[in-house]
Amino acid sequence: MAAMDVVGSNETPVKVEGKRLAILVCWILGFGSLVSWNSMLTIGDYYYALFPDYHPSRVLTLVYQPFALGTMAILAYNESRVDTRKRNIAGYILFFLCTLALILVDLASSGKGGVGNYIAICVFVAGFGVADAHVQGGMVGDLAFMEPEFIQSFFAGLAASGVLTSGLRLMTKGVFDKSSNGLRKGTMLFLAISTFFEFLCILLYAFVFAKLPIVKHYRTKAAREGSKTVASDLAAAGIHTETNGTAGIDAKLPTRLSNKELLLKNIDYALDLFLIYVLTLSIFPGFLYENTGKHQLGSWYPLVLIAMYNVWDLIGRYIPLIKSIKIESRKGLMIAILSRFLFIPAFYFTAKYGDQGWMIMLISLLGLTNGYLTVCVMTVAPKGYTGPEANALGNILVVFLLGGIFAGVALDWLWLIGNGSF
Image (cartoon, rainbow, N blue to C red; front, top):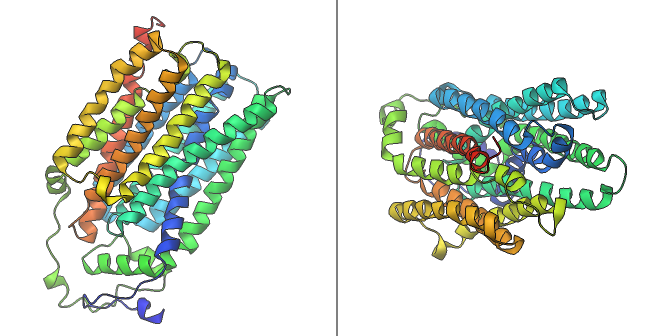
């Protein structure tokens, strides 16, 4: 692989290897970037038992999102000057420390409630938001100028974290439900698994991903196109861009579109992501915990709904791999995304008049369309851009994705008002 260690000035295709391993690593890195937060959502029933009057599912989500969105906006604005390697490793380290801290808070308090513990949990959840902005924007920007399958795999990993945590939650509820402190034991298991995966992601990103030949190839290409964000990752792979003989290359570098120009050219894609997530998060997960009433499944009901959402969200993220049913038309994407707003009256009337079977079907469709449309937008939008432009566009799109999540989380409270809970 010595040939891969030299930054060439020609555009001759290079034989690159490691694509399958890169796809697997992207999946694990995606998994790790959301497993901690998904654990928090999935163990919501534990926090409802500890803090019954504080609406933990809604409040913790509302704490998480401003920090994620605010940090992401700052990082996206300064994207061309932020070292991607340091950004991503810092994000995974922060995920690891905050998840570990949640375990320590619970152990120190012996699983007791109280305002002090609730505030501590909120602080570490805010840390998750900051970490998410570092990792999700950094990874999407980095993968945007590589193979579309890498972004697809990263987003599939995000969804898979929800599937695993939901599956584990159902298992732990079955195993621990009748035992003393059953909820707490399940919660500790969740947080321990999340902590392990965050540590694994630190190792994979720092020591494995940068050294894969196909990753080196795309980062080398991005460096030739003027990207400075990949320098540390290339250095970690044994490639030094300072001595590339850039005389004569600089003159040929295309003028990079500014962030404003990129946004204006892709405003429909940005709005697509905003609208996908404002709709999804206005329903999931708060509505499922507090507005679906009592059913035969009892305390299992919200857990089953969240599990079904996560499973179909994951399935939806693999459907675009089938080219014949992937939407690539900009107009087609917008029409499909706007049509999802019919879910709002559908959920309202199903919660009021329907039985649990209809609700399970609806939440499955919500997850399926969420995953499918997200991957369609994220894989189509960066096509045709240089490495630096694709990186910047990836960051811009994640800002709008997180903005949609934040707006959806805020709108989720309207269900409580409509339900007469205030």
